[in-house]
Image (cartoon, rainbow, N blue to C red; front, side):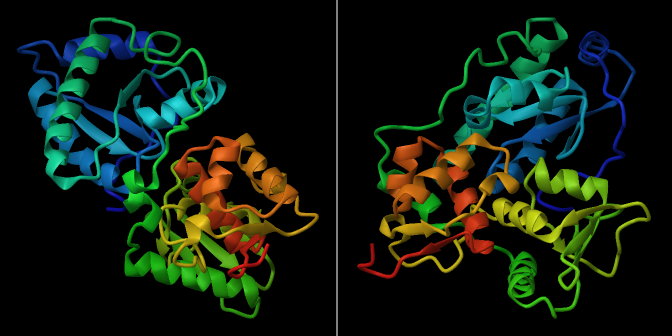
Length: 342
């Protein structure tokens, strides 16, 4: 099991909203002998919250008499963290949903003492929303479940003391630490041996540093680019015949972007106030289509700027900022300035 996901058989087709609503209504009806699993695709959750979700869904499923399975790539309906919904463009959210119903929950607080209370709130919210979906109460794309306009996800009264844990970075397990270290060595030394990593069966990738290309299974590509999950070091499993080929620098960007919550590469102790510079003539558009990433690169191209100032200047979330900086640092697109340099 990787990142709290429950392995399932991935389906190529998604049910339309009306048949799904009928299925939910039947599943939630008292005394119905029918028993079917509903697959819930997650979007936008931080790793600690993601680890909590399976247990919450199990409890919700037991209360409603439905088996709920969590997945990072596909599903019958989508469960998103509310902050993610608020900060992405509605057009992008519609594309991710693919006409499937949307459920949302608030992020869990970092304070462990309050986590149990919020987890119970998750439980109550999901029960309410699933019952509402079964009864046709508008929890579908285009209705109350979707924002009518984009919210910047930025708090002008941001105080670093309130998010000290996010600034410090999360701890990374030894396996993924080793994977990132090998990736970094390969980026600066193409003679390094190929690196194999992945997410399990039929979801592998093989990085050839000498050739500058990556063989990657479609499922692994989805887990990396859509769910932003870090792969684990491989156990010898190679990508399948017919796996797609991607340029090494593009895959390295995606992997580092997924590692944004962890300690930033070569970050000084006071990294929040340490200026960065972007290398001249770098086109970040090659690596990312996200407008917030391009805005960050443009701001740094104008003058050296510390992450705290950069966030306020570009009005981006801390998640977007950390992911961009991690990816740009890994590829050498930006670098930290020495103390006192401007």
